[in-house]
Image (cartoon, rainbow, N blue to C red; front, side, top):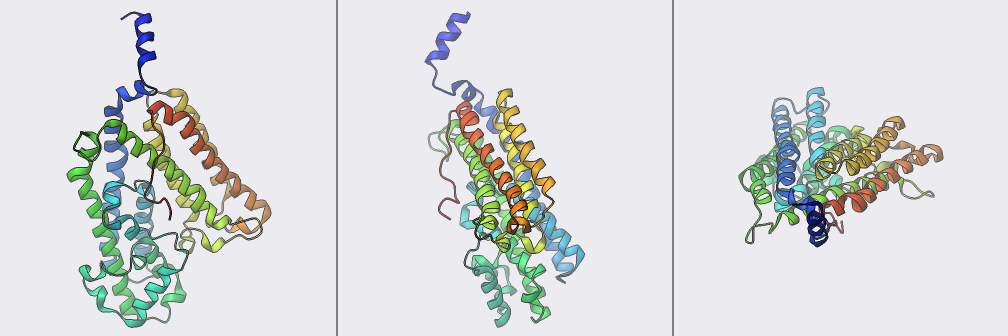
Length: 339
């Protein structure tokens, strides 16, 4: 085929078609090297956490707290994958009920503790409790909020910790099983009667996961504690009791960068632009040295946090303007819309 024929063919192809020609390979790479390793790590760390809690459910235990930190890391690194198996039965919210603007989690936990509710005695029973009393944020209260547990019955709190960690492990295991048993194949083998009708629909799903993950980190993980200049809310920072707020932003950015780079495969200019933008945000976050964003209450440090938020918004804009067109897609609906 000569150059004129190639040019004529290019003019006839729809926008983004060259990227679409390798869509199957790109999707397979994302599924095998981005998604499955993260859902595997989540399930493995969650089961380790549950095993540790069975051996040592003392809330001040360094071993329990270390297992909690590791498993929460695994969730945050996978938390942008809010589609497919994570959506089934509200599993994502069962693992991570946050933000909790009405304080449902502490109320639900306090009610269980006050009543010494026997619902915690079986996994089947606990799976039916309020979603606010389940998952990593409930565990954050139980392990790190001494106001909730100091005057509580220690044996019951121990049982509750075991119930929460066991439930996390079951939920994470179900997500992993669904990915391996069926959903990975549904993404890599689309068809007229499948969950995805084309590779283009799969790419749109993955692109939406990227942009909505960036949006959540900028507008919720950073936006909630920032509030407004007149009134900030340090206690609205994510997992501040366990000192994890900034860590969640870093883990999210690192994971989203990996996804972005895989979606930008074959487009070195786009990859470089995205990498530069992620580098800038991560460098500023590391220089901030404020694990729980306490600085939102002080003008100078608040400005530094706002700049990081702007950096992340810039990454999302870059993804929409440069990456989306190479894929021939735009961001669509995500499971967190409206929450």
